[in-house]
Amino acid sequence: MGRHFDSAPGLCEQPDPQTWGFALNHTMLRIKDPERSLDFYTRVLGMRLVRKLEFPAMEFTLYFLALIPEDEAGGVPVDEGERTAWTFGREAVLELTHNWGSENDPSVQYHSGNEPPQGFGHIAVAVPDVYAACQRFEDLGVAFVKRPDDGKMKGIAFIRDPDGYWIEIVEPARMGGL
View (cartoon, helix red, strand yellow):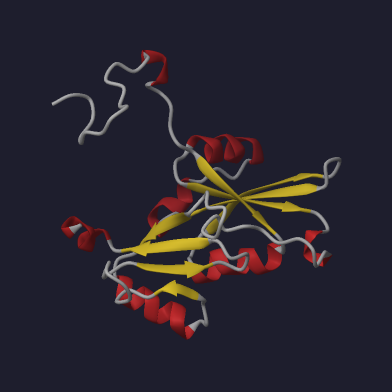
């Protein structure tokens, strides 16, 4: 077996050793209303705001969120500089970017990437039980794109955030059968 765990055309078998320390850190989504989006990501999905960076001269704010288990929360640095470095050093961070004033501008609308022209598709969140999570989302009034038993792919759901971005909800133990 080569470097990869599956095969596909175009794979590089001899990566530059200078890439060995690289890690996928974050994905950025633009948001219209930070209060609405922060409520969704922290209350509905259980994320924590780990760092907020404001840029008044350029009129935007960045919100960095992550799913941090209770037993790891004590390891998040308190010092702002250390926490910023920690935020940019961990994997699986979601950056929400708010351009000031967009919440009051009816013409501002973001594209999910799932309608033409297609592009960006979704982020994914792993949950212990997809059916229990989806029942909770249903109870909270979350908008669904696909419920777990809809369509051909059972046990996978898609919900929408306040800006219309899709979030895939997966249960890792169920994914082995794909």
